[in-house]
Length: 362
Image 1 (cartoon, rainbow, N blue to C red):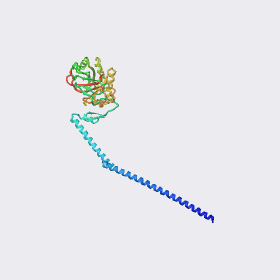
Image 2: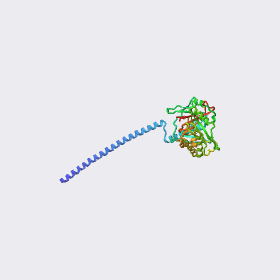
Image 3: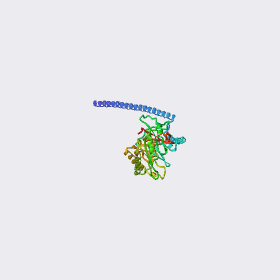
Image 4: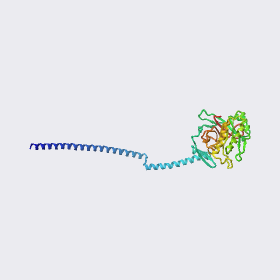
């Protein structure tokens, strides 16, 4: 009987212990639930504040003129259309203004393509990218201005640049008073020694070659010579250069010996069907022979000469005499002499004469 009483007491104690544990466990669960509820309330409050902030920002954006993605895309498309139309109108206006100011159609078109050389020939336009692999002359558009004597003057910032004033002459100038030419400030003259006919290909000496060379040198003017080439192959190039070397042998030639490379504007010209390779072979034979004879070779031509007739990159090693009338010079690559007008006036020469400037002389 005593043992039974003990057993009941133990069982009661166990039940009491279990009850306490259950109460503690339930209390913990309730506490955790309360904590979780508090966390949810806090998070919900934060989300509500974020939502309110976003909504407030959207309201502000809308009030300041912002648009949905679809609306923005439509605005972009409309802007592109307006920009294209504006660009077209701007181009038309620019071309119209240039033409009204007296510019040629070629000049107006060139202004639209500043990164290319634009050449007009036989009713077509040709476009050549300006290459950095060829030496550029480095002058700015404002570096040259016309002086009181009609010659270009250098007004740029490079103190190493020295300008020499020159003329180039042929029988078309007739008899020249070289003393007056010297007194007019001319430093050099490039005299035509001869030419080859454009159709029959006959070699001819210029009628005033000897008189001009003697007259210029006797008055202290440096002299170079040029030959108007119409050679169609290397053999004819050798004929031309040999003729000019024979002509200049008795004289003191201090400026270059030049091959004049221009296309004869005629379908019957003997050079009409030459390729750039053909022209370049003629030039190479001429210049290399001149150099081997102890003179300074040079190539004369205009923008067309150094694009359509020859590749500027292939003649980059030679000195260049560029013919371009007016300023600024529309030729990006290096040059040594610039023929800037064909209608110059110099005391001692009747009528018009080509005027030139040489960069740093010879």
